[in-house]
Length: 556
Image (cartoon, rainbow, N blue to C red):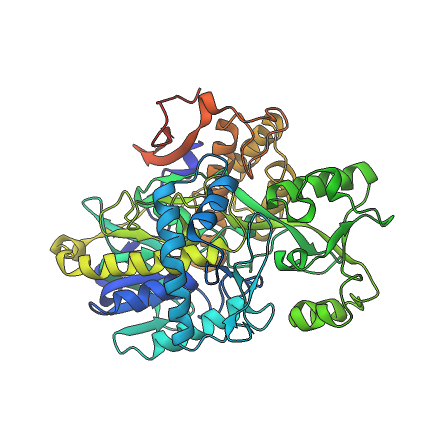
């Protein structure tokens, strides 16, 4: 990696003695399902400070439509759920963490119900739908297609009722503070209070994903990979950064922001058709529309290329009259905003970046390679998803491992003490003499080149070109000291994008969501394992971690 990415430890110059000070036992960065559930659990043991980049409701969880996977009704079993998860993971799923997730998940979902979550019912039982890759109906949903919103409401209400928890909204975490290579807190900038240092015995990164790196994305604009970048700068190991999952179906209306069309729509029986009305997915996979997401996304891209079109279509016209509006009220309303009547019209769709499987490497308790720092949810690489995520397992992972990580942090916090030397911490670099680029243009151009060259299909020449382009921008962006969120986000986006393309170049095979047209098949002899990245001596170091039950191999 270019040295422009790793020559800086912190993004701003600071002297902690001149900054506001806030103390807590545990800090949680992020207010999605993983962060909120971690905070609730950690609060059983001490004080918790939740830091939200925007409003507390602004997270990928809030926009999740389809649901949360969990075995609630027989004859489905946790063993079947685990088997489906590991099958989709393409050889890289970790059985121990998968087993724990699917076995503890039902109790965590029932707990949400006890706290007031209004999940949809089928008689007296929780209604469960079917999605791609699942062998049984086990997708729990709320208000049809507003599952994430209902979960966030429930968890926020719970968190706000706990005296030990404080929530700082509109507060940007700039960097993790370390002393003697251990995390002791974070440096933040609050819209009202300015720069502050938050000190804690334990810090939990639950900062979400990186969808804003790509021109086509289902994520909110704030998903800029901040957690991944600040962890890398602090010395943490990142893992599986080449694995970005693309959702097959987002509403495609030229000039409009992409909006998710839930996987559950296909689970209800929707077909994917081209402009001639041909249902093409059976030509690509035996499971047709219910094939894993990576299969469906690549099939759509291939079919659009063959037919020279910019989109394909979801067809729900064969469903019983009124069923679509009843089951998916928010998606139906979205379509109607663009004068699309799903009962009579085809819904134009195309794939978009959706979920980042790569993240901060953690153990089963969310511990990173940095003492005092843990991670969970989309910010973490837990081993649950392997090379491809099973639909609706993301909310389940956040719920289960948010609880586990919150408890671990809460118990560990009293044993972690901020050292006195932290109070004398300061950092500074000189002003850069290089020209400053237009950051808005850099961001827009980055998102375009990432979509074009590091998206659903990849190849070495395009990835190398992307690295050269990012390195050029880095020369004029990474050396600057900004004093606003837009600048810090841009630096983080460049950092994470470079890690993604670096790992994508290193994995010379196709596996799960990572498809190399120049290496179109899997190569288990060389790549059955994880690519890990970290900063050592101001350089990016790449290592290969073979699967736990596989013989050691090396990456050339």
